[in-house]
Length: 337
Image (cartoon, rainbow, N blue to C red; front, side):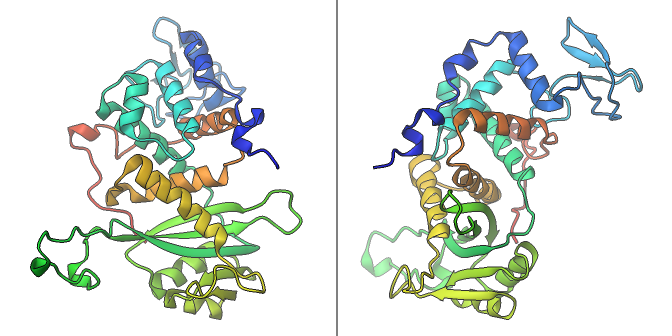
């Protein structure tokens, strides 16, 4: 029997012990390498690529062209950081090791920081994954499916007071649908399963939203797989579409199925029930994309994932939603397609 990847030595290329053993200078250099690579520094204000003046006592640079003073985190998702850089590296390492997601409470305990600090830090990492995700159109064979979250309505204690929760007026107003599009690996590819995943938050599975998103994020000539829900009926006009009736079977005799999309929802549900417990609709898009990132990179070692996420954080802009979050600077409108 083939050994699962997560049980192999290849999956373990980084340890928390190695992160905590870094000196402050080594942590600083790791951030610098992730952000600028072979360049010494690049001014975030004017974009000047130069060997700028380095103020060693403050661990900052002063631009030779515009005289702007900046640090290794200026203009990034970790701008104006208050914790040591080593803590941010440890947070990313812990985040990578949690294959089914990570709660802010657990991160706060592991880092010995307040829950508020861990909450914002985890969401900044999710925001960088969202900002840096590849949104180019999917091709080849693509599976579509939707799943509802936040739909539970607790029934009243007495049967006489209970309502029909199937009716729209009696459903949870925070109920949303996560639509997933997932491309398959090509035939004969040594890798199995999904190749790239895109997720979108919509009000419900409806023809208008599905047709709009499919037209934008799926290339013409692609073979599309979906279930028998009426929301996917318009796909027949634009793509070679194959359907599967899940009331009868999970996989048809000709091989039609949406198992790759279902595997994403399997990880997504485990993140929901086992870690986060409840998704706030305001940042549901971040949670859905996080599960997609973890699923797409399930065969990436934790060291490779650490380097990838660190580069994404270094390449992301200063967060508008989470800088000053606990002081009232919050998102007031959900992002819904």
